[in-house]
Image (spheres, rainbow, N blue to C red):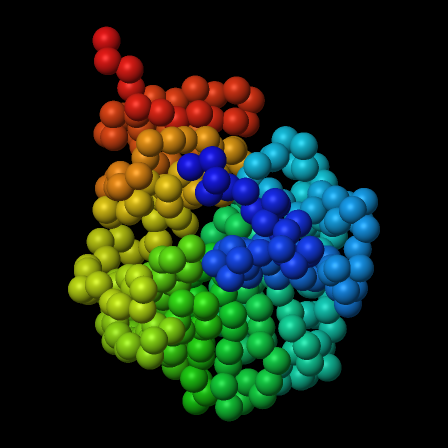
Length: 309
């Protein structure tokens, strides 16, 4: 598991052009990649000096070094968020049907926020997620790009509303639903109305209110019922059903600003829940059912199998 949380190192190798295709896809699918590209601006990556590379990486939120970069991350998000909000307000005040250029809103570790779109629809972003408004004429198509996880409440209109992710897309006219794109997981849940989801392989899945489905490797799993009126993360907890344990650890990192190191977890899966307001209790909720134990040192957490007494 140590190698699962090494994104700053991958960002540095991306700048130098020293990545395999698989690692390049990891970087370009990472929730902070839009932030990274915006920081890079128009500069040619290979022209950067080592000092400039380190300065750039120091401004990217990273699970590997949360304490070192926490204050800088908060300041960066506040400044960046204010800039995005100002640009969005300017665009709306001149009655543009959609922004003239990309408009990105993002959340940091442990943060949630609601973003209003040009048509009055709203997006509630979970931690470490971003939504980008795709430029175009929103009278004919409303389109956004998502990295991470979000709850959409879409105003009814004649133009279809499309959510793009690397793993697939969701198309609606007016409804409420969630989309989750984390690593290889693409999950869609419909809370009201009807949605049409499609994987990157073009395989479609229709969902009615109260249904959810997930796709891996371009294929949909059977439909499942939704038991709650709202997504669990909007209620202060994260729930999993037969999820790979590394996905659970990654969500703990996103919610608590910690760095997790683990080994010997290959093939382990988790069904259960952890809360967002009590880290030790959350760790116990995950570790105890799996026969694991944890040790904390500041914001670093080491997880391993329990030692037989």
